[in-house]
Amino acid sequence: MDIGSKLKEIRVERGLTQEELADRAELSKGFISQVERDLTSPSIATLEDILICLGTDINDFFSYETESKVVFKKEDYFEKIDKDKGTKIEWIVPNAQKNIMEPIRLFIEANGTTLLDNPHEGEEFGYLIKGDLTVHLGNKKYEVFQGESFYYISDKNHYMSSKKGAELIWVSSPPSF
Image (cartoon, rainbow, N blue to C red; front, side, top):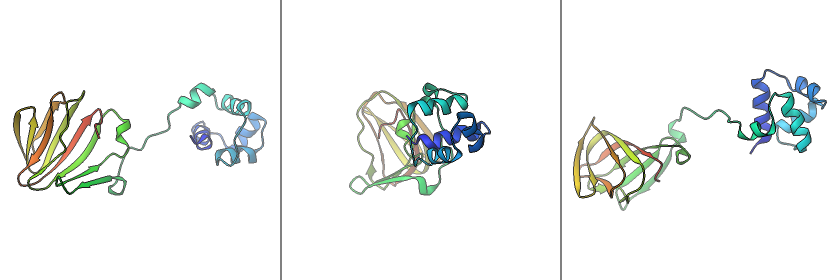
């Protein structure tokens, strides 16, 4: 955890300068600057003093959430290619496995198949952008065409295949990759 950047974020959020915080905490502006840049670490007692001046405490500080990234660009995506199965997966929200759901963009080549997924707790949703797709749930098959979506509870063996190739958005909750 970057204590310094978190302290700076709270300080800026509270509308204080480094000098104002230093005065309130009876510290030097240089020390506050070094702490914010993680060049030095405050003692627990000093950290508590700084946090009191920021209107918080040590418990709240360590549970304080910093703003999460909301928009992801192509260069943020993580990609995995499986030539044997004829698939490419792009995680379009990086590190989504820590979230409640995990959206990915899946490309299935002609005569390609996604990995067989054993039954698990959760649900999955997909939207077919291009091509055709067969969703296999247990011993049943469901045909999906461009512009259509699908949704299922993940309590049976399931996988997807395509005869002509497909591109889709797939959301899994909880993340299963």
